[in-house]
Length: 87
Image (cartoon, rainbow, N blue to C red; front, side, top):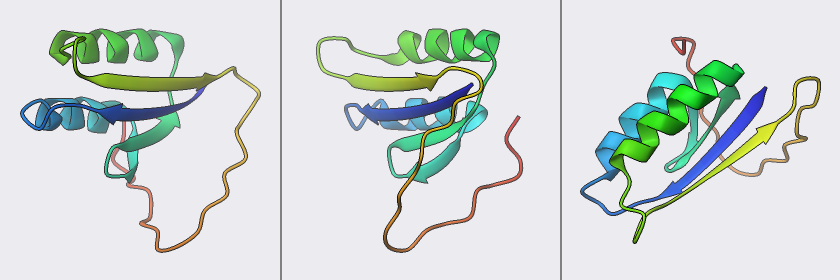
């Protein structure tokens, strides 16, 4: 399934969230990641992120699109190519 993750965390937790996101997805913007994950990978990702978060301050949004559907993405401005070393 296609997954988009957006996060807003305290500065001291940003490196841990960033490393976790990079393990599973590719970076689109500073705190935005996207990519294809299986149900099992998504569960592992959510579990790994939950271990790091302070739920009284941090916020993570995960948009998961069911298999067979892909969001239409409109983009303006400079972009970076997607890395090829993801999972």
